[in-house]
Length: 286
Image (cartoon, rainbow, N blue to C red; front, top):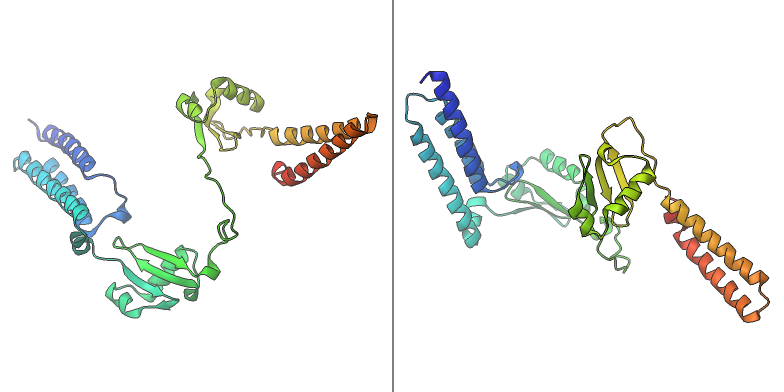
């Protein structure tokens, strides 16, 4: 077999084996790799290159070595899942860097982290003042997590004693010009509803790159052609106009009726509707 053909076959084999063994190792972002996982990744890459190009040795020896590395890595992962002592030994523990607005210099030295690097990490978390930090800890993967003091935390509905219900996720109902039936069914909508919304925007489904429905039933599209601007549906404006018309009708009924009780009822309903319109007006004019 010619060398170029043998290298091609070895490379394809190495890619297939590497893909299979990487799937066994699971999904991790680079920043989430432990020290041992980082070493394993480098070694596996080196072994794969060895399998592909070293024609003087048997290719199966490289695959055996690759399999041993992956088996050891999986074994260590299972050991870490079962034992906290193993996790602490292999991945090390989290280190507190700031407590009550005070930098712990000894812990900085322990992690060999310069002050400039710490400040840079804080700025990446939108923290520009050490005194604003209640607690900062360096995780085993090197990331720094920050808890601000109560005075500097963003105001949330919980701080105001307001309970907010969970907000459903937006659903992608059109992708690459194709209607996605499962997301539509998840939110209780049909193709007929979707076709009506597309007619309102004046676009065909095959021209839609992404179509999404938010938790409030609003439909948004992004077209393949970025030069075309899609007109926004005027649902909110139509709803506001309908509410104002109902208010005017109630006032008219109150003025034209001769029945005293009916007149009072129409006037009361008109005032209640006017109050509702005042409350929802900011939302309908966004």
